[in-house]
Image 1 (cartoon, protein in one colour):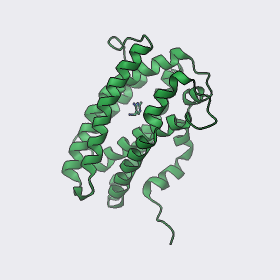
Image 2 (cartoon, rainbow, N blue to C red; image 1 turned 45 degrees about the vertical axis):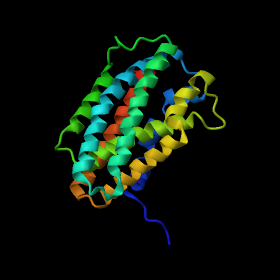
Image 3 (cartoon, rainbow, N blue to C red; image 1 turned 120 degrees about the vertical axis):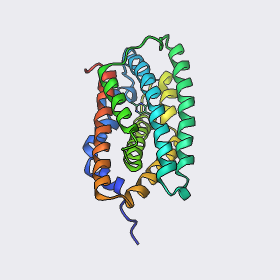
Image 4 (cartoon, rainbow, N blue to C red; image 1 turned 45 degrees about the horizontal axis):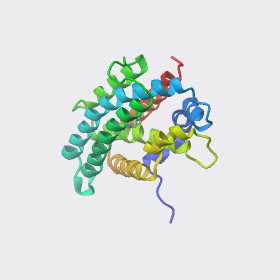
Length: 223
Ligand SMILES: Cc1ncc(CN)c(N)n1
């Protein structure tokens, strides 16, 4: 018997071009090809630190929605709680990495693309945004980083050794499994979602893809 095609699979097929634009962006390709401009990397590092700090309250809101809104026999809360814990490590890692590169994190001004992305996250914190819609954004945000950085670790990549640890952070297998758990949560929710929620969730996925591309563009000095 053939496996049923999930909603996320349908979306990824339908929006493949946009999705690849986020996971195979020239900034990521420049890491993978070994010709990344280190000043672009440092820009990304500082801006992403600001982003991750704004990401924490968003993920906490998804956790609250999971607690209230899912019949949590499936363990959604535990998976999302694991994500919160990983973000704690991620913030420490940014501080350590910034020190390594001689970058200051305390006086970084968020650039326009980052401000807009953080505002978008804030809009999703609203209790009016359904759990399913917020969970789709969460999965997409994590999964794009996972696929992007895993691409830089493939056998034929020429990623500079000093950037391998960065790529491992999101490109490693266990982060991949965590993203798959998020995807399962999302598909389970979408399976029972109303047409209205499914439409909103798909639109939210597209907004995430646009924000991620803008974020890479900003890091790459294309704004
Ligand atoms: C912009 C962005 N997108 C996703 C991630 C993965 N948490 C991140 N750190 N930054």
